[in-house]
Amino acid sequence: MREERVRTGLRFPCVQHAVISLAVALLWLASCATPAATRPAMTVTFRSDSCAYTGPQKIRAGEVAITQQDDGRGQYEQYAVFIATLDPGKTVADLKQAMSDSAPAWVHQVTTLPAQKPGDHATTLLDVKEGPLYLICFVRPPLRGIGVIGPIGVEK
Image: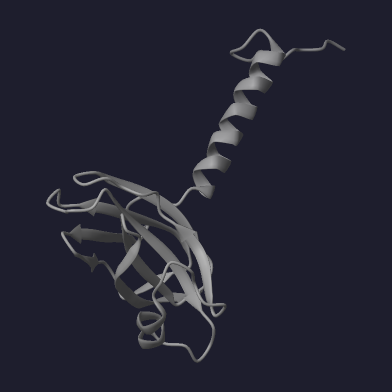
């Protein structure tokens, strides 16, 4: 009885294994990433002494792209956005009334976007787990709140 060997296109089995492992790893990574086209986009724009929001009023939990931009005409050195959730029963009116340099115990920080200088813009990817979200806009110096945006609903 005679044995026949099947030949592969690669002469070195370790190279073949490495190529297959790399392909599997790339497919796995691609399946984990949220494509930019399906990622909700939110934009906070600072205009002198106010901030405005452009984006959906309700988003899905998961990765969200938040762009912070300044129109360059502001009178402050820095602009920032504090993103939070509130205890049940609290509203945007409560938040506006309590705006100061320290958050009340019923305000829970999700994140603070990096401070921007006039004319700058940056996009931050945020993994949103729950909501609703409230965006609190700050300027400095002196540190003070200039606006509250929300609620932005979050669906699981």
